[in-house]
Image 1 (cartoon, rainbow, N blue to C red):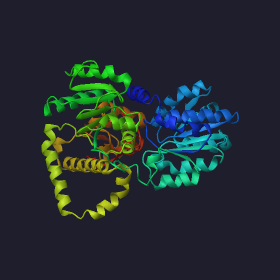
Image 2: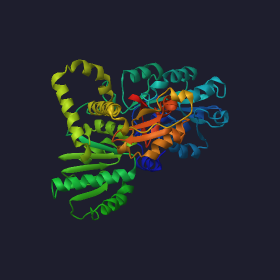
Image 3: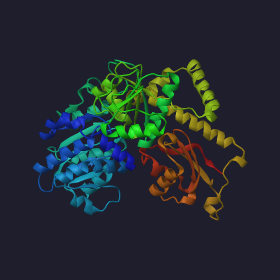
Image 4: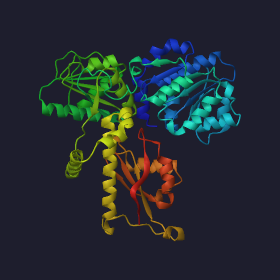
Length: 503
């Protein structure tokens, strides 16, 4: 886990809105259903429910928090730790291969569904001992649906159940009806109509907010400095308001000063105004740095602004979109600075897309993508498709390149190797925008799979994705090991690239 992300995440959710709104329901032991994502203070809510339920449970009471990945389990457990320990309990991460002793000793267990289900089936934990069952991001847990359902069926009907999702859909609503009867739902405005969590859903009261995400605090501060320089060049003298967490103000001033943007103390008339949430006078250009604690503070920060921007932790991008929707606004991608070396390629790609829009029948494609657009929003779906198409183009171009331009195959005396391509190209959904470097990819591959460093070839890092040449004998294992794992704070998609085999 990126330590910078851990510190920043804790700082921005010191008093989670979700916990304050649901305190009474937590105390009463009610089921809870939330449309929320990482950054909303979900771990603190889980901890509050866990400690309350363990107080009234039998001595062997257990709390299960089901997460989509071990990396998410680590972050969730870290944020639950203080509150749970203060109540006299312990938190343990249960990952594939964990020792059975961990399941015996700790009352609060956090991890993917499969190892927790195994602990129940082996008798390490009686199903009747589960007093609280948390489904952390139901949509992300979809690949493990069978294990999740098995745990739900095995747990006692009297156990409290908490389910969250970053995007409400019919499956989530059906789960609430079946497994969380009369659950307290939050936030109310996102449970009004099906699909209300899509970016821009509901009444839009102003222009869109341009959103950029960075995996590190240093990256977010650097992007803020770039933005302020761009605004100054485009409209000299215009006022800019920057709102952020109170504890981050001095750090923001220092970072901007190093970047050549001096911002005086509060109360001095200056084009750039920096302050805590809700304490800065509106300006024509409004910037929020980090995740606003409430929709009301976000709405106030961008009220009346001609142009609105948000720079947020990559882990909190989903929750920002939900906060923006609750504030009655919409989001749009934050345009990144173009790489001059890629402009001809980008222009050609845009021309192809424009030609397709004019000449092709788009109705069938729109129907095919409708569920994705409802769940993730059109800008995000379009961005993903553009990345996939450009990755395919690059793979095709590489396959057609002269042999001299390709990486030289490594020699090996193995007869099996002699009959197979030496290299296979793997697509990994993390890139320059996530501050990913070759070391991150090598570390992830060698850490999550049995591949050795010598079985990793050329690493080609692009803005939104990376292409890695790996030994063909371990290519399938690399894909299985990386798919769904966290790299630089992003849960990545990994797959064999089209035209992946390369001799």
